[in-house]
Amino acid sequence: MVTTLLSLLLLLPCLSSAADPTVNADLRFSYKTLSPLGLPQRVIAVNGDFPGPFINVTTNNNVNVNVHNDLDEDLLVTWSGIQMRRDAWEDGVIGTNCPIPPKWNWTYQFQVKDQIGSFFYFPSLNFQRASGGFGPIVVNNRNIIPIPFAQPDGDIFIIIGDWYTQTHTALRTTLDGGKDIGIPDGVLINGKGPYQYNTTLVPAGIDYETIRVDPGKTYRLRVHNVGISTSLNFRIQNHNLLLAETEGHYTIQTNFTDFDIHAGQSYSFLLSTDQNASTDYYIVASARFVNGSAWDRVTGVAILHYSNSQGKASGPLPPPPDDIYNPGYSMNQAKSVRQNTSASGARPNPQGSFHYGSINITDTYLLQVVPPVTIKGNVRATINGVSFNKPSVPFRLADLHKLRGIYKLDFPSKPMNKAPVIDTSLINATYKGFIEIVLQNNDTTVQNFHLDGYSFFVVGMDFGNWSENSRGSYNKWDAISRCTTQVYPGGWTAILISLDNVGTWNLRSENLDRWFLGQETYMRIVNPEENGETEMPPPDHVLYCGPLKNLQKQQNHSSSAVSAFGGNLLLSLLLALFAAIFMCN
Image (cartoon, rainbow, N blue to C red; front, side, top):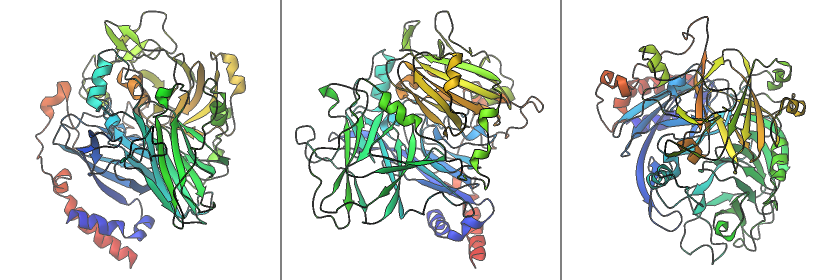
């Protein structure tokens, strides 16, 4: 009955005009045996699907997501790019939430406020994203806020990422043993392996993705790189990609024949189906900045199929940029991504009215990453010489229960001139400050960084070491605002952030191997006038763990969604349905 009521509510389009409506969703995480690269393996499915279903909401919606953990280990789900105002309790990372134990369920409750765009969810613990558990999130404009292009004829979700035939448990065992996980076994597109474009590289019988379109239309492609670490070049044979949005902000619309999408990043492109339908066309996602025949198999290939197509795709794959040894092409492409300052986002005022370039910088953090190092016999990844030690209890729970020694507010603002350490050290950020963070990549591969709870302005990037003179090259007018950025090897990326969202927010590597090995920290932001009271209080059903586990009440492990909402979901859905019918009439 619950499923039926949810379906009826989703069929009532008039709900989008109601004041702060609520969207309910159930996500059940479980194992499933599939063969995306031709070999049977255990993946993490969501509601039986791999990838998982998309969550479709609108600005200001309240969202209840009931997550069921049918895995054999703890689970947390994070909402990459969703900016929860004053509510890190729902963020879904180990510093903000206790894990959901196996066979338990827990309901995330948050509001997508002042936000639009393309995002995705995924499991944040134990390297689980390497086995799946991800799916897209769409935050739509309210009806009163126009999008800065003609309404597309449809949305198409494309989830790309490098993939290993080993499970996440095997991969993390390799990392725990101090070894590198090596070259991926392939690239998946929407959870499927490559089309057999080459009989030598691709065996027969692999299921591949087919994107079906009609001629003479325009589609919005929402493309997410959910992989472990590999930067992927995305392209469609004989078609242009018109960039329109990235991670919650509209861009100046620019045509590309191919586009680099780094681990953890999301983009929207407008695709015009204006080509001859004599054949199908290749959709390709291939590894960047790599060399050697071993990487030839690390190519994802899907098919773009016109409804009036006359034959199969043929010929060689459209080639990637020819700059294996020089990432300058990719950096120039990244610099060309600019914010559309004349377009509105979640609010009716133009987003360009926030003149970030004229605000005084209050703090500067130079965060340097290097290749993994050995600390006390263990291989670890660091930022400024600190490898993050995961806490036994979320930070705000520790504060509320007056636990001492859980964390320190002493994260160094520049690289330390001493031996690296393992510590639970946080950035003590200043509320309403305007912070400059320079990400210096002295590692050998592209490193990607994400900040929860915020969007930041990507004002500059270059090769070499950053210095104060580098500020002269910053884009102070229309830099793109987003939540995930790449830092090229031997280079730097500078971001600016207005610290107006109180809470404890995760700043991490989106390269899963580096994140797993400790390349992360948190920003602690408190309103000093209210001593943290500006933040949302913990939810009534907050989970407890570590030194507070004795406070946890036993959960009724029902498979029914009704139990997740304390027995009131069914009544709430009935009332919502009657109210929706009344408003529609």
